[in-house]
Amino acid sequence: MTREVLATYLIKRIDAERDSLINQFTSTQAGIGFFYLDNLLPESIALQLYHAFPEQDKMTLKKSMKEDKYVGAQMNVYDAVLEEAIFAFQDVRVVNRIGDIFGLSGIQPDESLYAGGLSSMQKGQFLNPHLDNSHDKDRKLWRVLNLLYYVSPGWKLEYGGNLELWPAGLKSKPVTIESRFNRLVVMATHGSSLHGVTPVGHEGARHCISNYYFAERPLKESDEFHVTSFRARPGEYIKDAVLKTDTWLRMRVRSIFKKGIVRNPHVYKKEE
Image 1 (cartoon, rainbow, N blue to C red):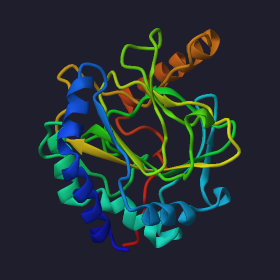
Image 2 (cartoon, rainbow, N blue to C red):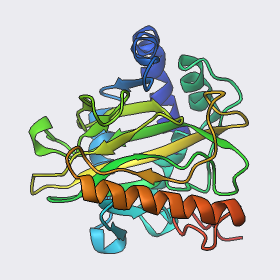
Image 3 (cartoon, one colour):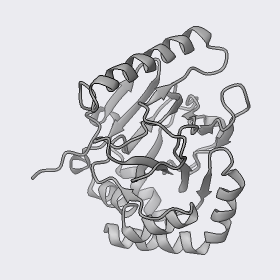
Image 4 (cartoon, rainbow, N blue to C red):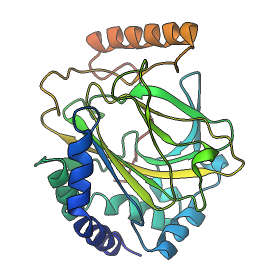
C-alpha cells in the first residue's frame, strides 16, 4: 500500500465531494474556515491504519496542564503503512486539490512532520484550547492548514476526544467536530484559529494522523508570529492566567532567540 496508491484514493474522494467541501469552507470562512470529509479511504484500509498504530509505550507522552496525549513523528520505527499514509497527504496532487478548496496556491507540505505525524489519546487525556505555532520549524514559512484524519473504528461523539473550534473565542459556544472513524478534517490556521480536543471519557484509544501545510504568506494580513499559545477552558481562571503568562514568557524568549533555545524534538529525523 504505497503513498501513490493512497493518494489516488484521496484524490477520488476529494474530487467527488469538491463542491460540498467548498460550501463547507465558505460557510465557515468568517470564523475558522474548515471542512470535513467522511469515508475518506476504503474501510479496509482505514482499519489497517488503525491496527498498525504503535502501542503508546512506543510513542512520546506529552503531559502538562496544557495537554495530555501521545505523539509520534519518527515514522521509520513504526509500521510502514503509517508513513505511506502520512505522505499520501503530501502528494502534490492532494496538496493542490485541498489548497484549491481554500482558494490557496503555492502551499507546501512538511516532510519533517514538525508537530505532525501520529497522535493517540486514551481515557482522561485532552488538549486544551490553543493556537498552533504560526510558522514551520525554521520560522521561514507560515502554517496555513491543519489536516486531521481519524482512524478509530466505532468512535462516538459521547466518547470525547472530539475537535473543538472556538471561532468567536472562549466566551462563546465552540463548534464540535466528531472524531469519527475514517473522517478527514481540514481547518484554516491563522491568528484566530483557537481549537482543542475534548477530554476522552472512553476506555478505547482515539488515533489520529495529522499533517500541516505551509505557505510564504499568512492566511490573514493581520497575522503575526506567535508560539503555540494555550488557554484554559472556560471557568478555569487561575489555570488560564498561568497559561497566558507561559505564552508571554516564551514569546519574550523568541524575540531574542528567533528559533528558540531548545529545538522541538517533534520532527521526523530522516537518515542521511
